[in-house]
Length: 237
Image 1 (cartoon, one colour):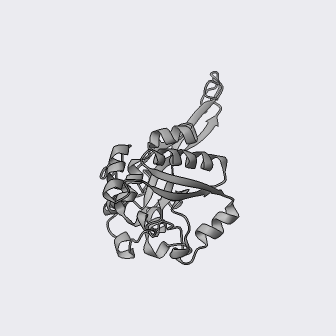
Image 2 (image 1 turned 60 degrees about the horizontal axis):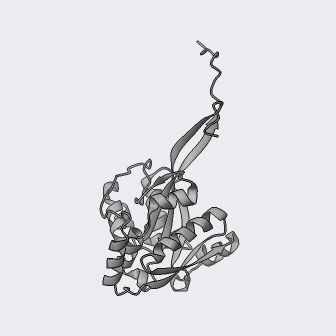
Image 3 (image 1 turned 90 degrees about the horizontal axis):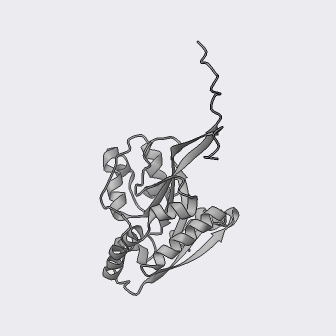
């Protein structure tokens, strides 16, 4: 399509975020060093190429750019650093690696993305079993769990859209204690109190980044085509 001179391709960044939730209630993943190791173990740019043909923008932020009150953050710098990931796992007592279960939907793109995450985590010693699910099974086993102790997954690959465009809706459903499933969408079982959520928006991302309840991956691009006007066309005055 890009080579078609009769079409103009337009790509615009969206506020839809792809992420991998980390179940902080499970023993190994309760250790922040393990969660940080997972964040260092993934090459987000390569993941984007493999999973989505490069469509979108790699991100390491919990709040997408374009959301009201967005503030850029750089620390910790979760760059692709597998050696750093291995050091953190060693310090946490998992120098020999660990086994985790990753859930995703059975959509082709989701399975492909999850398999890439599995391959990259394997390079730092994290052995992952990927379980694709249809929507009905996913809803029952993920969103329908009432007791966190009954949550069977370790990692969940999914996405979130800040549909209101406001910072509160970017963070509260995914990180507030009151938003644990089945009430809302916090499948990391991360605990951020309402008082903390109500702090200045500029103060929101750093604690989330440091505690690493998510592996943030990509902002989706909105892509469309439009027919350019013919060269003979004249503007209406």
